[in-house]
Image (cartoon, rainbow, N blue to C red; front, side, top):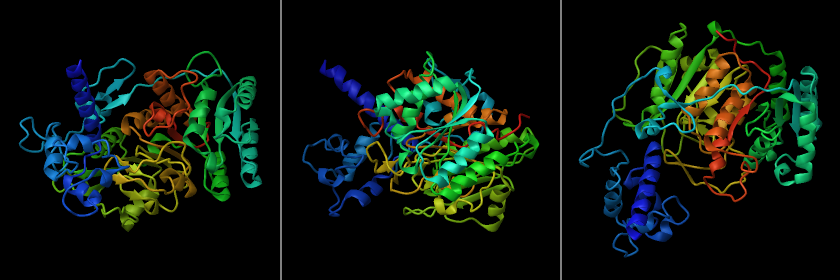
Length: 497
């Protein structure tokens, strides 16, 4: 029995390490530079307490002397095929493997659904797409759910409701709604009676939290007997009244962009020589859009360890270097800024933390995003100011999580028409692309969003009562449902080609 348990523990540990390799393990030297506070060349349990390495410490400390020199960490990593610099080793453990850089067709990627088997290499490189499908909505109405009472927020919402001939329903606190059964049931009854097609959720900034989002999925998935969300949803959020009013005003005036007028721009991130999946996705999008004679400018941001990483060819490629040392890109050259200004669809793939996506800082977001759709697959790109979940100190990619404005919230404040992101740990391209695909086919904002959520609900088997996180943990299973789309759910961003 002990042998089985040990094998299970090692398997679980190897899987966990494989997951971290996706985000690239930091070099051992970086770990000691950050955590060896007394600079004696060894780590002690107190030095890593509260960090992601606290649970690893006893595994590193094979001789049980409560001190871990770098050699013990290196030896531990080697057992799982990881080199001292964080890259993957060859099977014989001799040297890092540099995978061949390929650019497949998006149509060739495996579409996964419940029960689909996925090769580990495909999972590690995000070389798949979540399978989604249309989920019919019987209703025809339009509903806005809000806890705003400030007239500067309420008036734009009334205008939006009038435009769609819809109804505005107000509750005291959207963030607390999931825990107030009487109020929840009352609102559920109201929404059922209206039979909406679209539901716009407009929380106060303090209410824009994980369990508020999950509570909305609890509400909107229980309007009938099936477990999926039965309306087309969308969030309406901005950090100040003027930005909020501007978001709604331009939604009312938006003319869907014809496919021939589409001007995509892709931003990717390459932190090391072997972590190229973000760059690959940008190249795949370029190949995809070229079939329609649409050019896709590409921004590739390289980390200090990406000295021999592949570069894309072409005149519409900007290879930039990340500042490093906790700093991110805060401005672009005039020619690249012009490309951002010309674009109407910005797609970003890479790591992120609050205030940063793909090594681009909030300060680097173009000042005028009016009319643009911005989609980012980065973690924490829609992070709330006040969280329902335990704090995380470190994020994939080796980045430190700090309290900063969410990337997509800043984008909306600066004029973005629609913004896609995640409140916590995102799966990136495999979940972003199905939404983009839906919108490019002419679906509304809410329809593309609903298809993603329903596919995830089915894939993970969520049912009524499962959505809200009752016992907070850093990585709850409900994390997968924390994707956020800010924008009028009835808006049609693009015209089907």
